[in-house]
Length: 266
Ligand code: 13P
Image 1 (cartoon, rainbow, N blue to C red):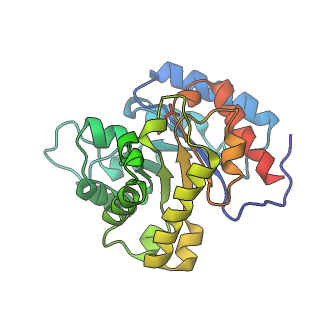
Image 2 (tube, protein in one colour; image 1 turned 90 degrees about the vertical axis):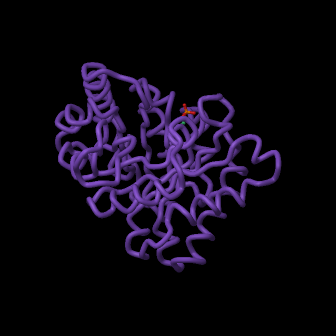
């Protein structure tokens, strides 16, 4: 399957696999091998494909993908460059291991590891300083949505996370909207629900950084993305790709998700 040269999308779609705390090195290498065989049959150069292994498999995955059209992301980092921070990993260490991207502020980190907007802001700054593109995650809980607080929560997370960053810095990042109630639940946001929040995030970027930056930043959707629902989500104007958890663990379903974006590139 070849993708036509005309894209209906302004921004290049990105499909990011977030493996979370899954896969040994050999599991990861097997995935890359399977993926690569399937990617040979489909042309993926109009989609950015990113794999986020656990720290232990980053180097092995980045060596294995070589010059393939796949990039590697870490799932977290610490904002200091080096020093006495037992258990932490810095931006330069991740870049040294082959990462081009880093996920920052995932809701599992916010809720299970107590990450704050202030800490997330420091992580975003250190990632950009270390030449990594942050994939900055935001999203409301079910309770917040039910209390009509979605827009307030999202504005707060976006503004605090990006506080003090220049236009140039902001244009290097991706934002992932991941409603907490849709993560790992099998209950994805509808395309309309997601588009409403994506459009809102883009309007915040426009207010603060201007039109050109707001039109550059890719906003991904995450939360129970599957091969079945991805095309309908990505058809929406402001949805520029997906951050995928469970359905990214098997090469077969991940490749189908990547292929699902082709519908909207025709
Ligand atoms: P699921 O795709 O398993 O819902 O996870 C989404 C996610 O948290 C990606 O970062």
